[in-house]
Length: 203
Image 1: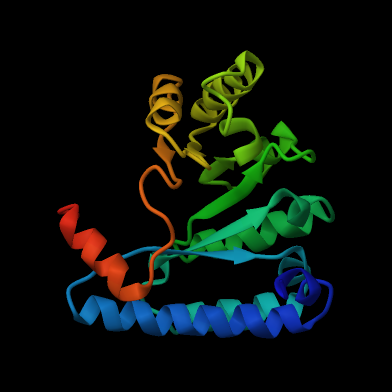
Image 2 (image 1 turned 120 degrees about the vertical axis):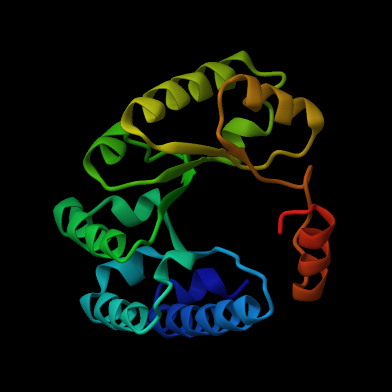
């Protein structure tokens, strides 16, 4: 409820910075317990357009020896303006080993030029395309095109909103690299997440 309101003000920088600090501390704590995870953090257009915020964020990452454990997700709207300056910012993050995701790809602002011109590691194909892909032929064509184009650029693809076995099998057949959604798990509290991870023999 409150995030969209904060995103219209500079307070979103303070919140995002607090979250990043918390994530780094949690990553250190979890690793000391033998749990080595990667955590994705959503970055808003306001964050990426603030030079002061980006500077503080990079300084914080400099102090975190395993910055590659943190991954950043940006929506397409964050890329709409000042493409060249954003390209430099993302390159700075990449230099620290941070993976870059484009979230909600295909929500209306999509441009394949982003994929060609920016140092992107993953695109997350939006739920509006994925949720009916087992019944909608047009959605299937779009995903197939995005997968083929992304592979040629060395970009991984992720299907959002995978809510059933049918959808999972469909996107898997189309060549999607990863899937996320309620078919696998609903959001979990921290302790429940650790139990889920141990149950899947990931470690």
